[in-house]
Amino acid sequence: MDQAEVVKTLRSIRGVNEVHHVHLWTISSGIHALSAHLAIDDQMTSQSDAILRQAEEALEHAFDIHHSTLQIEHAPCK
Image (cartoon, rainbow, N blue to C red; front, top):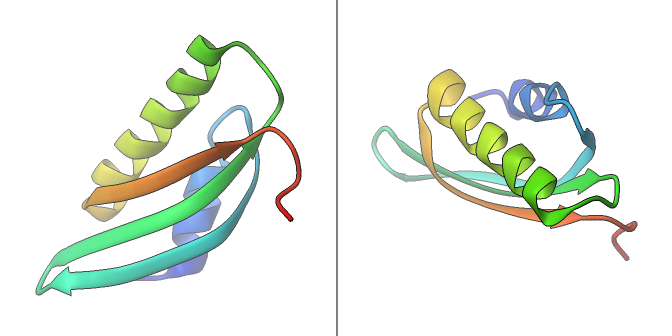
């Protein structure tokens, strides 16, 4: 799986400004997992939740990733 394509897909989601700290691995044959930080503008929780849902759906449909941990950030990560 091409990590650059995964990042590109996540960055294409409206509201996602940056994607970093991406970790992609295989749990077992054909089962992939991902963790990443998504930097977004500071906004209402409902809007952040919508971005998170869109990201999870994109990962499932485009890459068959059903195990993801996505951290939403409103300020730069240190």
